[in-house]
Image (cartoon, rainbow, N blue to C red):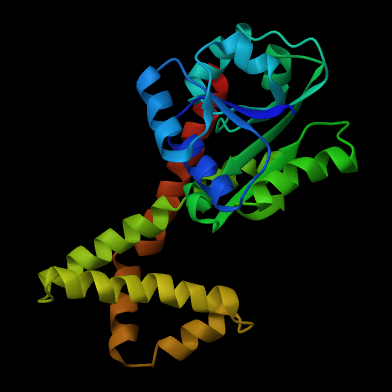
Length: 263
């Protein structure tokens, strides 16, 4: 049986492998990386097969996943030789299909994927953008893989960078850390601050996700006019809360475009 082969043994590979193991994915998984320590750790944690030889790893692939940093993609692709039709999935943020296709042309068939590190728990979210000429069955194969670790969206490639900037779980962790730290400064102990901040973000957002109530209605329910929450929210907005988020997203988008220029 051909394997699902990851080229790159970093954090996102670890998250995806963990999620696939949780989902009892029965296709063989092989990971290649130049760093033997990463390979030993992945083998120990997830019982995956590891292959330090790049050529041998590629030869065993039924599905090839490029999981290296964007600035390493071009050098990696120059060393790969493919002599049969093969679907190649790029997890490299910011590098468009046109450049991937130019670096590794047919018979490689390209798709870009942006999976979340939350895939390790089966609660991930992945956006897919397919190259031209993908059949419905070929798309289904890729969707099936990523649906094992969470929700999947197929979107136009022109939206993929904006999605990448927006969907990162770092936003939630960053907001949680900031809210918990601020709660400590107004008098809560560390444990209580973290519990209350986690409830505000995680439980509130989970309720929004699972409820059929529109977001504006939930916000209206949570914020009583003239109340404590209303006062806090008004002060945050007047301090540039929304502008700060917009600046952050624009900075992330600029980095994605920089990745593309370097590729």
